[in-house]
Length: 114
Image 1 (tube, rainbow, N blue to C red):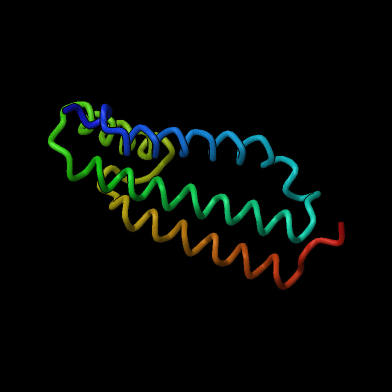
Image 2 (tube, rainbow, N blue to C red):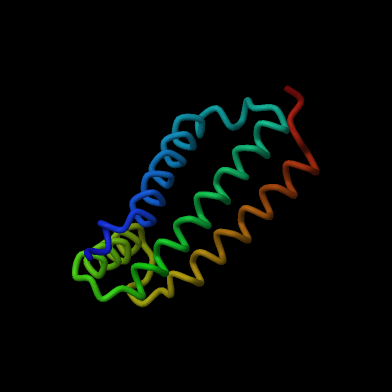
């Protein structure tokens, strides 16, 4: 069975796509959101990041040529965004998680007066 024919993988990719759509739709409204809305937005980012980590791990463990190609496309995209070619994506994911924690702390500290 192809990697992308798995019901689990297809469901996860659909959820990733839906989360991305919801996040991108509201990203420019972030500064005008209430504290609770901002925290919810960050929690959606955390959920998205967790799902992306899991998908990347599945891609890394798969021998399917399509999975290997998708993994390479992710690495190539990261390189195009300025990351080193040999960057460990798991370190990148962990750094992003830490950034989201900082965001939550900052929102809790300052909040929004909306």
